[in-house]
Amino acid sequence: MIKNGTNPYFVKELDTGYVVIGDNQHFYGYTLFLYKAHENKTELFHLDVTERMKFLEEMSIVAEAVSKAFGAEKINYELLGMGDAHLHWHLFPRVSGDIENYGNNGKGPVWWFPMEKMYCDDNRPTENELLNMKQRLLYELNKLL
Image 1 (cartoon, rainbow, N blue to C red):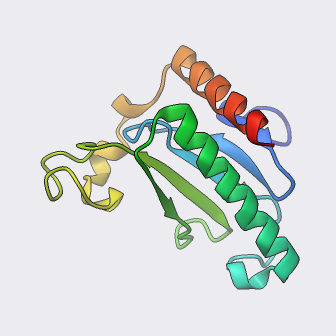
Image 2: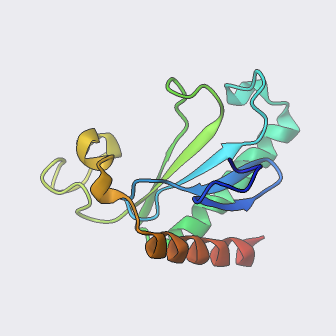
């Protein structure tokens, strides 16, 4: 969808990957950084050292832009892949109390928040909210790049 221009969540293409806003926004500013190459690249150690360092560097830049664009107190980073076996980062901007009543005084990992609430349709941004989020993130990315 990114290559044919139909992904409404797409923000920017970098050398090693694509920046996209997550389609559910309980953690406001949730962003993904998707590695461009899919063929047999399911682990960081599958990348040669130069590519790996570039991918990690770009992910760090995306995380900084997410933090600045969405006022994060902390960023949670996930590189999982059992559901979708290609390299992609989940970047969760965190603020105090964002998992209130589910963690230790509102503190803890994102997976302490119930998945059915995190991914419910109530957490999908409207077209205008999505446009605003994309503009804010793109602005911060362009300042850093």
